[in-house]
Structures are given as C-alpha cells and as structure tokens.
Length: 578
Ligand code: PEP
Ligand code: MG
Image (tube, rainbow, N blue to C red; front, side, top):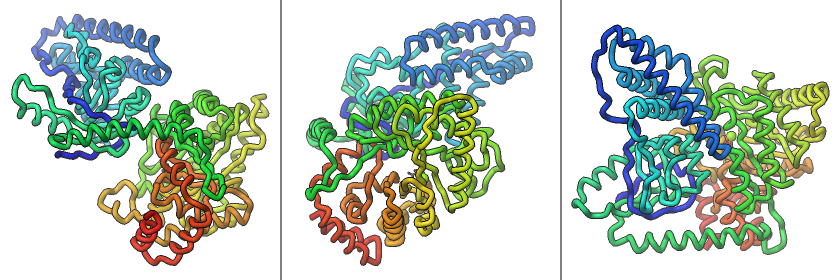
C-alpha cells in the first residue's frame, strides 16, 4: 500500500477509481511574432475575449448559490483588473507577440510570483488568476472549455489543483472524492468541496505524480485502480491490492457510523450520573452553521470571524459582516452564537493590513492587539455584531487577551460602538455577554482578575500549548513537543476553570483538545462546562460523555494531577479507557 498524508478539508470517505485531471491551463499556446500594425487588432481580440468571459461569468453567477457567487464576483473583478490589462497592453506593444502568448506569459508571471509567496492569501489568489486567464485563453483559441462536467463513472478526482470554475461545472454526482497536490482549508476549492459534501484531501504535494506513475504502469485498456480518500484524517491510499475488501468494509461501516452519529445528534450530552454538558461547534464560514446543527451542535462556541476578511483580502464592510453574522444566527434558530472578534496576524494576514513587517508574527500584533491597534476596523466589527445581536443569542469573545488592561480597552471600544449604533438609530443588543479567550499562559495565571470583567472564558488550547511550551504550532519540526497533556498545560487549564467557577462564570474550551476523544473524561473531571469543536467530532465526544460518570472523571482528574509527565498522563488515560 502507498499512503500519502495531506490536509483533510472536507469530511467523509471515498473509494473509487481515480481520474487524473490535468487541465490547469491549455498547454499548446501558439507563439509567433506580429507586425506593429497588427497590435491594435490583437488588442481588440483581447478586449472582446474579456467581454465574452464577462458574459459567461455573469451568466454562471446568476445561476449560482450564494457562496459560489462570491467566487464568481472575485473572478469578475480580476477579469477587469486594470493592472492586468495594462501589463498585457504594454507586453503586446513591446514584444510584438500574438495575444494568446502575451496573456499566457503575463498570467503565468503573476501567478508564479503569488504562488511562492509565504502568505496563504496570495497563494490562493494565484489559483483564481490562473482560472480567469485560462477562461480568456479558451475563448481566444476557440477551445471548448475543459471541464469535469462530462464524467460518466464514479471517480476520485486527482489533480495538481482544481480551479473554482471547474468545481462549479463538475458533475457532483460522479465525483466521490478529491485529492489535490495544492490547496488548503481556506482555498475556494476547499470551500466548494465542503459545500458540495465531497470528501477531500488537499496539500498532498505529490498525489498527481503518484497517480500518473501508476497510470503509466497499468496495461492499456485496464481500468484505473481504486484509491481511498479519507477527508476526516487526510489519508489517501493507493495500491490497496488484497486490502481492497477491508477498505470497502471500512467505507460501508463509515456510512453506518455516520447514520448512528446522526441519531446521536438528538440525544443530550449527559453523563451516566446526570451531569449535562454543552457541546458546541467551531465554524469559519457562515454556511457551516447548518452542518453544525445536523451534527447536534447546541450552539456555535467559536465563530472565527477573520475568515470574512481573509477570503476577501481586506477588512469586511459593516453591512457584509452584519449579513454574515445574521446568516449564522438565523441558521442556529435561537441557539447561542459566539463570535470571536478577528484573530488577524500571525499566519493569518492579508495585503495592506497596515503595520510593519514583523519578525515574529506569532508574538506580534495578532488578534486583540491588532483590533486595538486599528480601532476603526474593530469598532466596525463590534457594531456589526451588536446589530446582529438583536436577532438571536449572540456573544462576543476577544482572542489572545494577555492582561486586564487589554480587556478593559476592548470593552471601552464596545461601549463606543454601542454609542455609534445609538447615534445612527440602529437597533442593537444592549447587554451582549462578552467573554475572553484564555490562550496565553499569563492570562491563565491571572484568570481570577480577568474573570472580574469577563462573562465567560473559552480556553484556546492551540495557542495555549504553543505559547506555554514555546512550540510554533505551524512548524512540523517541533510538532512532537506540542503536548496537550504536558502537566504545565494541564495546570493552566485547571487554573482557568477554577477561576471561572470561583467568579460564577462558565469555562468553555474551543481549542482542538476539546474535540480530542482521549481528553474528554479528563476535561469533564477537571470541571469544564462547555466543549466547542469541529462539528463532525461532536457525536464522538457526546458518545463518550454518555458512557462515563462524573464521579469517575473526577477521580481520573485527581490521578492525572499527580502525574509528572505527558507520557504518565497518557498512560493513566489509557488505563482508564480500558
Ligand atoms: C486556539 O488557539 O485554541 C483557538 C481556538 O484559536 P485559533 O485556533 O483560531 O488560534
Ligand atoms: Mg488561538
């Protein structure tokens, strides 16, 4: 067997023949010199191709769902981009090459520059630019646009990347899974895979090469082999051979498991001795709210609002934010929605966000520090949340608070935002609860002080681990040190929960640890009130909660408290499970 690991971006599993899609850009672009007097004619061909592309995109936009429309709008903007037009015109005049060749060269140069950028936002925009350029080239070359629309059999699509327009045109009935070399959780292709409910793994680097090699090795006329895609874990498996039966059973069992888990959605998260626990979902994009409900989420414990900024590449307007928040609130039908103010900075940056280039962005102007440094952006977001708060049970949460002064300053901006709403005559939620994330070790240490001003805590273990163990969460080299069960991390968690309870407020957790089944009993025993996680993990965690007693969990937590290392904690947890 050959196993490749990538980023799981869309849940579910698939087993089907693979289909290699290699239509990123037309390969044989004619290249020839033109006379100076032909420049104008070539330019006119370009303008008319752009016009045809615009009509195509507008037609597609009118037939599309809302989230697809946003992508097509971005393509429409790129199509008309004056910088792109200026570069094409000047290259045409100076190099005197046919227009197809000029468009291909200019777009390739722009995309190559973007694709090597360390900033994820730029890398993702490269895909959109390639998509728009390819559309223009197909029109110029009078080619039928390559698409995944004509698939006649069930397949797992393997490609270097799939352009968003091909995702939209694709025969969704036939595509059972997707495995890509490129892509990330926030790429448009990933967003669409999730929206279509297709299991997908991205960022695999060499899946196309692997599939091409295997295809070459196959005898002519033979069907392509089956490949397994696990959108839950990021696994893509080739060369299944004698294990095929096992994988077929796995896929069947997974479907049954999904059905059982769906039944679980309607049962309460209650321990054997009657303690009721709240299980919430983490979301990044508004349309995930409905999915969260289907997994049994009792609310949204973390809405990572920065994705609104990251997909558009700029601070979202008040109305756009208001509308996105209302979409989530309406979808949740009165259940609580905790909107975290933007956690921009660190690895989540967009162009022109202001400020100097930082040497250590993870220790820099991130999260609440960014918001406090840009009060207009901050107050715009707060107004949008306050106004949306009228339509449901909305809470605000500030990320990466390190001291009481930061929390006080953030709260005073909230008062200013309320004042602005009042002045403009906008109805808003006057008494919105405001919580504080605990994800910096010093914040855990002063949780008792922060609790005087916060309506609740939410422990962000992803950052709490990163900052307490000095382990960059994005660096694979030191990943092995990121130990959630390190006694130091567990002490910070316990201290936060106890401080919350002393002050009569709730302690939630929204970091990955909340969805880690091996930690559930321990966290219950430590007194955690609310767990918030990727929606698909909710049924699994609920199943555990329903099979343990709080009494046993407390005994377990006490045993763990005495452990001297992460390994010792893991051993105790394993023993408890057995
Ligand atoms: C965390 O740090 O645990 C958290 C939930 O926030 P994020 O992962 O968005 O930084
Ligand atoms: Mg965090």
